[in-house]
Image 1 (tube, rainbow, N blue to C red):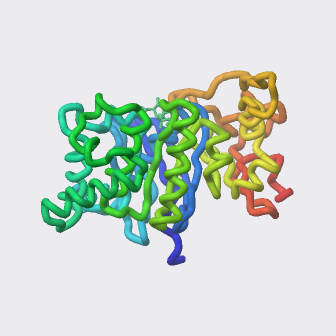
Image 2 (image 1 turned 180 degrees about the horizontal axis):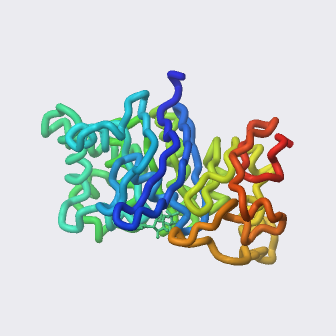
Length: 322
Ligand SMILES: Nc1ncnc2c1ncn2[C@@H]1O[C@H](COP(=O)(O)OP(=O)(O)OP(=O)(O)O)[C@@H](O)[C@H]1O
């Protein structure tokens, strides 16, 4: 048990006004030094789940049910003041667009130093030294010179490294990276992902990596959760996941991913659309788009059935634990 860093337990997240659930009874577990991927199409609830862990949801959104345990402590029970101590210090986040997260009028070095000011007792002089060393450790060349620059003077990749330096400044045990490389070109994307993987080795940090890109998940994660329409529909260790994807949605996602090995782009869109949260169907939420659907699927909701290889699949095809 002691190597479990985070447990999201039966968490349902809803819109306070309409009462609609955006995320439905989600369970996620992250172990020490593990990189856990959450994958799914746009709008399936990946970001909302990660914001809920940090308790940073939009004002109209709330956790309706469930618990979030961080190192055994229930985050959902903490007051805002206590949560502020956890954010940045124990858990930190990296977003898709660093420019939005960084203050445009503050020097990047000062912004990293601010994290150290809040979360450590270092003197001013030591904070600057530590900031430069953090900038070097995330691969920023000429760190002393860059320290005095503003975000607009840095490339997208360098700004992303600044945000990673801010995220690791207080030595958190969990980093949530929400589409951290989507806005970057392919070469820089690979470098940033390599940097995240190295943080796990160097600092023993655990990482939740949110992405809609299966190749990113495949190359970087140990364990994968697939979300569809606010629910987890499959979870597995990464090798089993790619060797034998089980849920019809997962299979469709894999088929829809361009295969870099093949010259012709194999992109095959998944037919149909995700149901909207105002119109959640009875039974399986994927049934409408599923080639294997039976009448039962449209009436009864399947559970997450555990398989012999440890995978869990929310589909009646796997009810007997095949
Ligand atoms: N402020 C909000 N108020 C009400 N509903 C919202 C709000 N923000 C997001 N949603 C809804 O919550 C659902 C989940 O959104 P979320 O951003 O978590 O999805 P996602 O999987 O991260 O998608 P993306 O990859 O596009 O960010 C969507 O249906 C979205 O319309």
